[in-house]
Image (tube, rainbow, N blue to C red; front, side, top):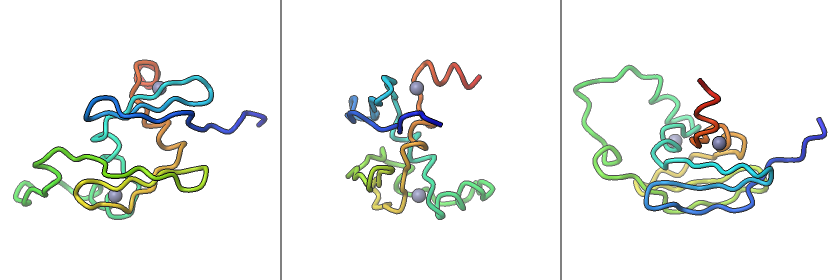
Length: 112
Ligand SMILES: [Zn+2]
Ligand SMILES: [Zn+2]
């Protein structure tokens, strides 16, 4: 209950396809942008993920070119809004969500 609020101390890009977040508890998160986008919490993406895969579906631009974040904007002290290179901008990622998506060896190992 008395745990301090989790917040990022620094955010940086690692190469072209990864985001690195250093947290105030000393944890260092590594997240691939593709992984973040795949877990976009907006209603549109959630609905899409719940659809069965249609093999005849036309590929969307984001499935052809590498998807990149255009902007990464803090919303208050609890979330970040990410605008993507395909124009998608309705995903709001809470800090908790970003932390849960962490792909560092520690977190990936723990989830097994
Ligand atoms: Zn979305
Ligand atoms: Zn981690």
